[in-house]
Image 1: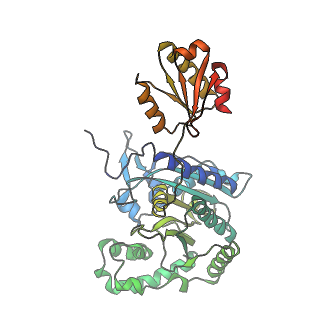
Image 2: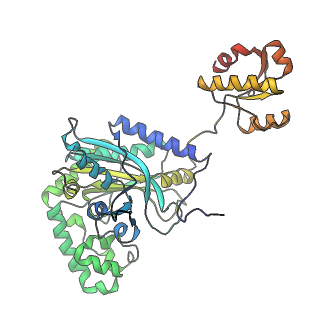
Length: 419
């Protein structure tokens, strides 16, 4: 038997309905916020992620699924969504759209070669939003509020918002120098990845999973101490808008996110549910002014977030939140005899065209077995057609809730079921 690839999953009937409901809620909220859907390719030029995500990140260094096609072109299964959306924004000249800022959302599979564990897969599904064209702190607050609204409407209560500022270029350079001076004397005690990042991007050291318990991590210089006046004021305005929205938050100066393109606002939404697991992050995002230029477009500020649908569902399970009720069908048809089967097939077909959820037996089972099948499908009604019913031009319709049954003329059956 051929096994499913490691780090992937089959989403089976009974489970997939939860995915559909979650995506429906997120889509509806995005529509209310005036975000429109965009769909980008599952694979892109490898260069896009080298330039967009950053060559010092774990994603680029260790986790990408990259390959050459038959034309020798370097391609990569997308590990995240922002770079693809920004590439599309640039390539389709969306910066010239009449409606600005351009507000987009997406959902789809992403791919990272990580060690599979609970809530973490090598193929996973992200839902994300991107707002391009505004450098207003209110835009940052809107994006954060959109993410928090999704979790609230899903029914999650045990979540917290953690936020930080990574500052502008000037602030980041000052912080980079302070980090380099802090780690350099003892960099030999860190892993090889951290040693290579010291000169390229020492901020990435703070995101290291191997050395996160090293004593220098706890005493590392805080970015908040190196924010210039402009960056500090920007961050204060973002927090003020969150206060206006009555969205609680916790400022965490160690929050850096795992992608190189972030600057100014960075945030994560975490689950605080008991027993949720070691990996508590549900959603991450932030501002990425400069990314559009890096990918060949005009100077355009941007901000967005993405969350894993798998982890959102795990959080719902941890809090005992039921997202969808058990599905029910409108009626199950039991037909006895070939002529009755022929009649039932026609009625079922016509009823489905009218929007009814109908089912019938296709295994030539006995009547008792068909009643059991109707129970398993949680049918609201059972419709019985046999030789006697055909002779009278009726069907027996039984209400499964009340137990009452009545004879209904065959020509009125669909109308009665709809009523």
